[in-house]
Image (tube, rainbow, N blue to C red; front, side, top):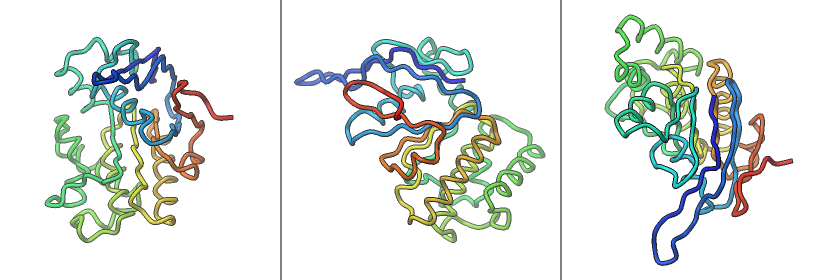
Length: 222
């Protein structure tokens, strides 16, 4: 589903810092992996390259056979909207929309008819255990419940790729464990490729495979 081939990225500056060099990775449909590494090692840069938010200096990113590095900015925006889902540490749930309205956003942006939209939102809210909170506002939810909304929103349009960036960083340990298990289950049920970026070994342990990003590259942990 996702293929990275010899990705490299440097940033201009006084020392022209090379952040990533020769990174390769394959993630299949329904596969959920974790990427760990020290702060500042390039995890966010890698995520931005995978999502097409930044462009590599060398190498390519392919999603479902489409080479992202060959697309222009408008085409990348459409691809992200249709085929990617994002879960962030800070939730990014819109406070002035209800739970159901937040989850419906990707469907509305993709022009899904109202009847289909309502059915898919209801299905995803049931999957994340928030079926009774469809009309609730985000301020009425706990942190763990809010992150469940974010997971439902990330998966409601059935993306090919789900990218989760420290999704439990703002949660207590019990809520974090529940959210991580839910994220794993939903990725597999929807048949997406999932990538978890984390500094937490406990979080990484929920993935099928763990990779370590360091100055020497990206390597699968033994």
